[in-house]
Structures are given as C-alpha cells and as structure tokens.
Amino acid sequence: MCPSQAVTGVSLVLRGNTLSELSIWGGAVRIERDSRQEARLTIMEGRDMSKIVVTEFISLDGVIEEPRWTFDFDRAAEGDKFKYDELFEAEALLLGRVTYEGFAGAWPSMGHDEFGQRMNNIEKYVVSSTLADKDATWGKTSVLRGDVVAEVTRLKKQPGGNLLVEGSAQLVQTLVAHDLVDEYRLMIFPIVLGAGKRMFPSSMPQPSTLKVTNSQLVGSGVVLLNLSARSDPTR
Image (spheres, one colour):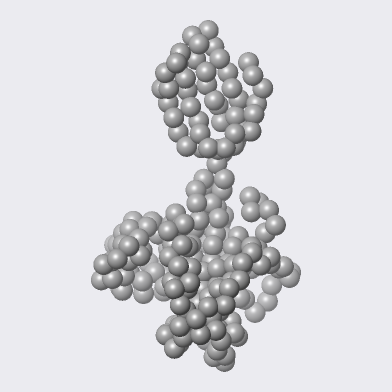
C-alpha cells in the first residue's frame, strides 16, 4: 500500500491497464493496489466548499436599493465583462424573496443572449418563509424556509462553486453579520443617494477587515472592486 498523497482534480480506478472509473474531485487520497492488480484512489477528504460571493451596484453611501440610478453612468465594456464573468463563474444564485420575484418577472423575457440564457438556466436558491413552491417557478429553484444562517451554512459546506448573491439587501446584511460572505464584487458609482436600503448592517459583532484583490476605474467614474473577506478562502 502506498501512503496518502495530496491530489486535486480526479478520482480514478485502474483495472490492469484499463481505466474503469473516473470522476472529478479533490482532496487527499490513498493509493492502493490489490491482488487483482486494481489501483484505486480513495478520497480521504471532500471537495472544496462552496463560496458565497456578494455582487452589488452600490452608491458611495452604501445604498443598493432599486439601482435604476446606475443608468446615468457609463460602466464601459470592462463593467459588462465584470458582470459576465461573475455570472458564468457561479454555480447557483442565492437570493432573497423580493429580488427573486423581481428577477423572475423580468429575466424570462430577456433570454435572447448568453447572459440572459444563463440567468434563466442557472440553479437558484431563494430564502423565504412565505414563498410557495408553486410560485418558485423561475428555472430550477429551491426555497430555503428554515433558519437563514443554518440553511446557508449547510449550503456552504456542500462541494461546489460560487453561490452568487445579487441585490437581496436583507439577506446580504444577515450574511455579513454572521461572517458568511467569502468575496465581494462591487460596482461603485460616484453618487450619494442619502436614502435607501444599504448593503451593510448598521451594527456588527466586531469589525471585519477586507482584502482588496483588484480595483479598476472605468467608464464615467465607476469603480470595479473585488474584496476577499477571508485570508483563507477554504475556511
């Protein structure tokens, strides 16, 4: 028997010179060979956990509500790519009920390009205690009705990719307050609105220091800002 080794990417079974099983995976593995000359890679740990990525259009004073005011600004091609990349890097959307219902009423009629098709076809999770299953019909949708923190923590522990949170002010504030956000992707507009729902809660259990991973000034003064909420993204 060979010792355990750290391998990321695949799990496979070899019988003789024939590959009989292959799956995409990751983690530490144990390599064994039995009397039938079968080499087996056994997974000792699971895949990376899912990451929660919050993306918002946001004013200088932190407002994210009803961002029609963003139409007054040019975000340039770089801003379009910023939104495109985050959507196609995501495995699912995680939304509050109000944002979900707004999107569900608009996006089905805007599926004429790749972005619209992705929005309509990507898996969705919606946090709500009132939304009935019969009304959660925008593509593949699962309604999370239990304790928000417990439900989202359970999702994060599952193997997978990014869970993209858009809009959903109340949900975002809950995620921030309970340290569940892994990354922020913000499109900051040079405007002070003075009123409206804000992204961050009015109080925090303790300060949260973020790491700027990328920033770019585009168009008519719009800032594209990436921040990591954790020094260790696997935590």
